[in-house]
Image 1 (cartoon, rainbow, N blue to C red):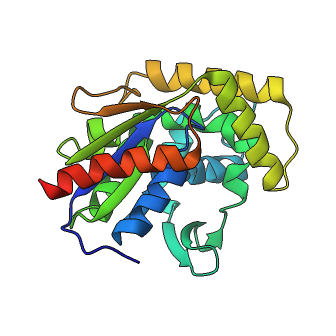
Image 2 (cartoon, rainbow, N blue to C red):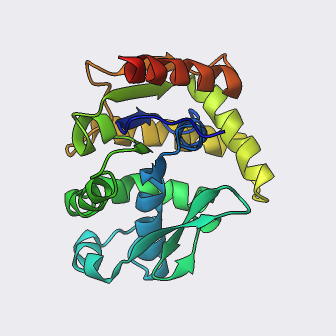
Length: 233
């Protein structure tokens, strides 16, 4: 049953594979809010770069990607069967494609490009213009919505996150190697935390939750209690 609530902005930031998307999706459904997966947007731009041979293991043509941004159309379309919105790149559903390890290996370099970040942040701010939104990513509370009424920052042990990521890949029908996934997790942490433009940080007014040793239900209930406290105030 959807609760009747006032409209606020909820920012869910944190490291990869900490359960950001899972908890944010469920929270949006509980509140009757819009859910926006900003990570999917960066992954979609990465897919575009891969499709047009702009990035590979040895080269990354940042300038050509920047010059191609006007050719990138992103859209979230709600899938009633799945219960959440899937991302479309230039009219094509790429929801499954963006979750592959191949895309994971390239998304952080793409996300360091300032022009890409500005391009997507503008879109994200438009999506949350009227509040009533739960948005997850790396810089929601610090850059996209610094005035969000609720800011959550999720973290967890790298090995535990790699194990979860491996399980997630297998559930989606992808193959995965634990050591390779762990390295990817650590590499992404480093790139996300040290990039010059909008690095992954915990802002002072965010509530940090360590998801290493709690299950999804416990994580959700902890986040929900924080949100309900703010709504009651």
